[in-house]
Image: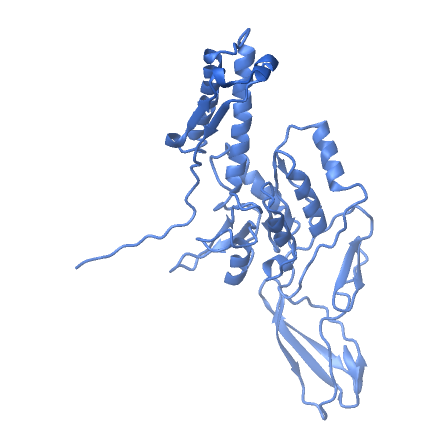
Amino acid sequence: AISANADWDATTIVVAGRDRFGREISETFNVPDGGDTTLTGTKVFASITTVTIAAQSGAAGTFTMGVGTTFANAALDVTATDGATYVDVAADTAGDWFAFQDPTSNLALEDRTAEPATTLATDLAAIRAADADWYHLIVSDAQSKVQIEAAAAWMETQVGMYFPHSFDAAPATSAEDDVLSSLEGFSYLRTKAIYSKRNAGRGPAGAAVGMWAPYDPGEADIEFKSIAGLQPDSLSDTEVLRLVGSQQSPAASKRALIYAEVLPTGTNVGTPITYGGLTSGGEWADIIVGLDFLNSLIQERAFNLRISQARLPFTAAGIESLRLAVLGALRFVAAAPYNLLAPDSIVVTATAVSDVSDADKQARYFDGVQWGANVQGAIRALRVRGSVSP
């Protein structure tokens, strides 16, 4: 937008930069005598390097770049509305979904979709009531802060893991009110958020889960995996620290999963990998999944023990068989391929029958089996030191 001022002489403005593929491009704009016009280009810049204005007879004229509707195309089923410092883009038909891919690096995006009248919690509860035989949750068209928070709050009351995807600009900044900071503040253990600006519309959450879920619980973590079909985000060192933390302090971050290119020292070839395995609540995602599996396995072993016998006596022998069933489940997940627990740390005890209350005996209720163990964990960062001698 060129201001109306007599100091504007008829001239040209040349804008130079790069397109989204990194190619150098430029465009020339013709300014009329006296200014007072809005000039619209035909080229899309991913970055602008120079703006060249021919010498003018005065210094009072001004211009503003980048304000206004960024696109208008009748073939698109979306409408852009000029908001002066921002542009709202909405689907023409309620319920339609669209995505931005490879946005320019100087464009800040935010999904502002509101919670629907029928809330996500209501829909998810109905889905689980109709079919409870699922564990991982991805809601591909719920990427705004309010929608992600709603689904995360619901999943925290369930057995499962929620994988939201955010492409908002704010999580990579020092903002403390963005969606990732909010999830961390709620300490949601069953939410593993994925952050990617470049892969908006490509389903990075589904891709990450599809890569990880086929492994047995505890067998693999979600980090250090390359995913076909995704493009690595270009993140600064500062942004990486905000999103996933340092190698030694991963919890001091917004606890996201990112997909970025790792460039080993001394090389010029990078490898794209997933990085950041903590849930929003600060526990490793593979540990949460493994413990859910262990809980299910203990229930299964105890139930099978009960139905395999005509009568499970409320005696020392009956209690010992329950203890051994739990011990067997713990040892099972401590071995390959699960490797969830440290085998030597497993301890299982049971209350003696003489210490059970008469009321519990009368009700045929026994809650005296207790166990403890250390998780095996996994190595994710290391430093190797060495020395040489003549």
